[in-house]
Structures are given as C-alpha cells and as structure tokens.
Image 1 (spheres, rainbow, N blue to C red):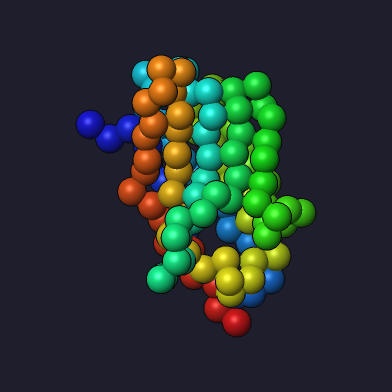
Image 2: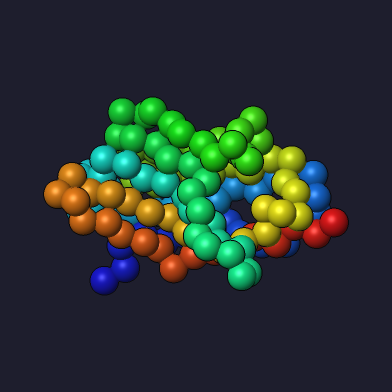
Length: 117
C-alpha cells in the first residue's frame, strides 16, 4: 500500500525552479504531526531539507533558507517544496517523510532532482 508519493523532480539549469509534491494517503496525512523533505546526494548521507508541522511551523536547512519554501494543502493531503535559485549542489534524490502521531514514520520512494551548471 503506497502511502507517500513524490513527484515534480527533473532536470533544470542552475538558477531555475522546481516544485516537488508529496501526496499522502488520507489515513496517515490526518495523523501526521510533522512532514518534511530530505535529500541524498550521491556518496553522501541523507540530510534534512525542510519540515512543516501540522500547525504550519516550518524549519529549513541553512543551505536552502531563502531559496526553498515548504507548504501543505490539507484539503489535498499534499506537501510541497518550492525550490528556487537552484544550484548544482542541490542535485540529489529528494524524499518525502511523515511522522505520525503514534511515532510511526513513513518515507516516499524519492524523486530525482538534477541541476546542471
């Protein structure tokens, strides 16, 4: 049973923009207390990009502050990551994550973002 599905990745030139979407099944979205985006570049560990709580509080990695914006649409059970001013170092597989109110967490399969210089 698919719980989190990411979309919106692709190839973009440096300075460009992309918007990632993460659609969650209603049964987990409604119980999610924190949703977020993580990324993993080749040869590197997975790292936090941005999170948003059910109350709308957001948190960003220093490397993306001012360039990326996380948001959520509760009516669509979807979390977004708007990425502007993309840099080659933003190239990675981006994963959606949800922490449920009982401590269970869920991961999407990831979507690849490639930024060319």
